[in-house]
Length: 335
Image 1: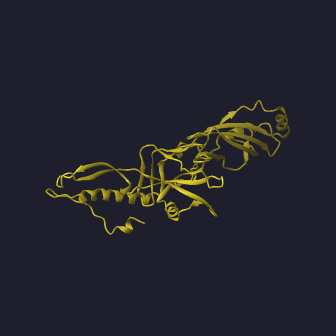
Image 2: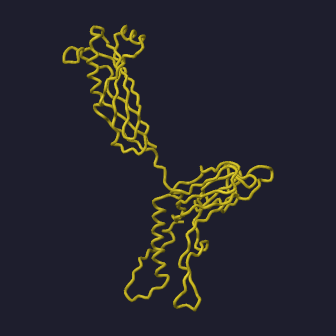
């Protein structure tokens, strides 16, 4: 049911000096504001739990505690609990065959008839002793819904309650398993609907060009590796750089990935200066480490293999200059 479907038109209440006000006039102000708020909730949110309504209970407990919370039902109405509430576990021994039984704990918006009087007053123009209600204490309605195993899993036995849960007229807070009038398993909250729609992961990317590379000493490399490099004429270099990702505005540490774009067969000068050059095959391994919300560190291992052997021992300076100009393209996935 939609609020707009049952509203022919919207009235803005106006008052003038000397006007005689009746209870419906003042009640209309509250009805208008409440109706607009429900329409907002219904249009921009989805039914479910907005915050709180945490449920506590462990195996063997005979009662459960519900913490304060806020939820919205399928009509956009706010379900608010302002204080902790303790509810007893349904007094059920089992299914009669020694097996436990299951219940959903639901919460729903209360009608005025379900609320307690918070304040009454005597009417000035009414008969002596006549009193009217001026405040009702807003309290949500909690309900245990008995479940039975069906082809699609556990479902409410009562069709009316089943329909109210499916339409989110009643909001599921927790599911419990009861045996001998106590919890037989910890509380399950997997079926709680969320009033905040899932926005999916937040993805951001960027490019730092050039990256602030710093040379890493590889003097402690194994002797066998050094022998192999010397035999092939290759050079092994290592670098580190800190990449700034503050432009993405991540709220939690994301999962970073990074790479270095560009060709891998690079003409390199033997001395790093202008002059004759030779083609060098660069094999690089990039590793992301020390990830934080606004930065991460990359470790770069470079194996440079000359494609000609004429200047095999003299091109390392040229490779270092090439690496110093390399950018890092990164992507972060949060959530």
